[in-house]
Length: 341
Image (cartoon, rainbow, N blue to C red; front, side, top):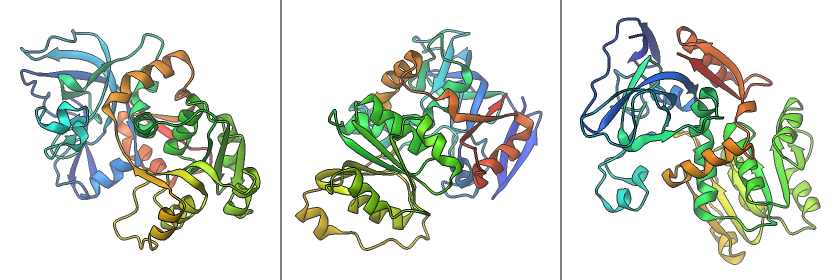
């Protein structure tokens, strides 16, 4: 089969004769149709999550090509999307719907499990979700990127009528924005750093867009909230300065959601413990929620959550390197690219 293989740090090589995946008894093999390209894939091929060799790619949609002898829930030819966490299946975390917290957990597309930059990929049966008939392979192929932000709010909840600030206007930020809208937020505020991003933020539901190169974020947030701050303040960047402002922008008794992961070498600000205590802030972090897959697929199918317009570029598999360059450089107008296998 055709595949892009990570063999040495930072290098992908195209292989048009890679072996067809082994199908274990409780696994399936998927013929990949669409694979989302994520900036995390760049971290994978840098060696951050483990050593090569590996086929990267953790945003995967396709059709069932082969089933293991113990597989009962899916059949050949079904349209499916991959929920990527692979775990032991029997610990407390796995049994409570938190298999991504399992001590033995890894993911499809992360060492040691080959991912979707290939014609075929093998995954456990319990990682399969059926794609609704009116959802395209491309849309399904990037749902994993939206699932993480959606899953955090789905886990912790959000009161109807909340005012919400989202910092970061990539796929994660736009997904938080749409999730807050689905949870009946009353005012959605998004910060951007480019003029070109203003209309994009509005397109995905922002009521107020603050260009932080031209305006002071905290001053503007206070203007928009009668000096109180927002009910829910979200960081989707991982930038240390942004994280600090995320706390400052929250109202007393409000909620702070930290999603963006700082670079391992980043210098973090002193965490405002006194501020958190005295203003009774709730600070939560999150990155995944397997229980949120079916609700999000339903919202995408009903048109309430728009992943279609997040896809700004498509590439054939052979141009995976070009797609990764886009994910790295993030030019104006870019949101997300998909590989067509």
